[in-house]
Structure formats: C-alpha cells, structure tokens
Length: 113
Length: 111
Image (cartoon, rainbow over the protein chains, first blue to last red):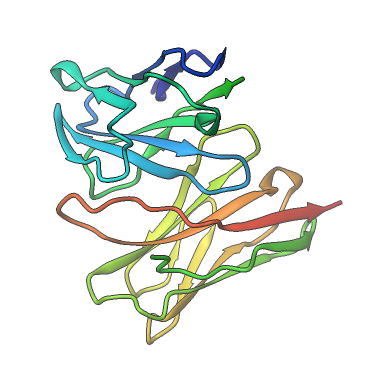
C-alpha cells in the first residue's frame, strides 16, 4: 500500500515570498490533516479536512495560510507571504476516517531566510 | 491545554524492555489513549491505542491503570531503531476529534 506522498521534500525561500506544498493521501482516506512542526516541538494541527470539507482550522493563521482539498483527494497548503517564523516541517497525514489511526508523510522542510 | 504529561527524555539499554509512562489524570470516559512515535526526519508513526483494557500488537504493549489516569507503553526488546520521540495522546473516538500532539518523550536506546 502506497503511503502519504508529499512534495517538495525541502524548500528554501526568502521572507515575503509565497510557497505551496502538495499532499497526496492514501487512496480512500477521507480525513486529511496538515501539521506544522517547529524544531524541538511536537506537531501542531493547522487544518483537518473530512473529504473536501474543513472540520477544524482554528489554528491556521488565515491571514497568510490557506489550504484546499479539491475533490476530496489531493490537498495543497499555501503560505503567502512567508515569515521567518514559518520555518518548520509541514506534515500531511490521512486516515480512513477521523476515528482511527492517521498515517503521516515524510513532510516538507521549509526554511525562510 | 495539555491533556497528557510525559517525561522529556529516557534512556534504555538495547535488548531490554523500554517502559514509557504517561499521565492523563483528567481523561474522560470516552477518551482513548493513543501512542505515536517519530523517528528522526520522519513523520509520526502510529503504534497502538486502547480504552481501558491492556492492548498488545506486533510493535508494543499498552498497559492502562484501572482508574485510567495513567498508562505505560512497553517496547519488550528495544533495538537501536526504537530511538525516537514517543507521543502519548488522549482522544475521543468518534466525531471529528483533533489529533493533538504534546512534546513527547525522547527515548534513546543505548548499545
């Protein structure tokens, strides 16, 4: 079974630039999560989708972050404009539904300079 | 709003059992205990979860106290590949409950 795919693996941008991350969840998984993990901390949930609807985005900085999940499959997370404090690993995860275990991708490491 | 408390770090000798504690004194009757681990430069990996009975799978055992206020994850024969950060999470199963991570326990397996 293929896992959660994320791209790119690494990204370096200057502050105030824009960046987008892509996630392809495991086939058939209805729930999709985006997490931000700052060095030395646990992952912090940014947004949770159930199919293509948003279940929770309470910790998403909506002035600069946006996410979408078209057709309830792939998802993109965008930051515009980026700040230095956005440097982190962005993790995507999916689960068959929100009641059972989630499977994580390897993440995208973003460095903002 | 941390629901769990874990020691920040632990060491364990290779081949011995690693016992990772977690306190969740405010756990509700409908909340499960989940364990994930995160090996360096990888995404978190699900290990095991339970409600009130002890659970075992091919990776680990989960022992939950009778009052459910604490639990212990047991890796029976730790190997160097078990070096990782281990997260204990309490979570309602059903609805769209968030999967919220704390800071976890950094387990180092010593050769």
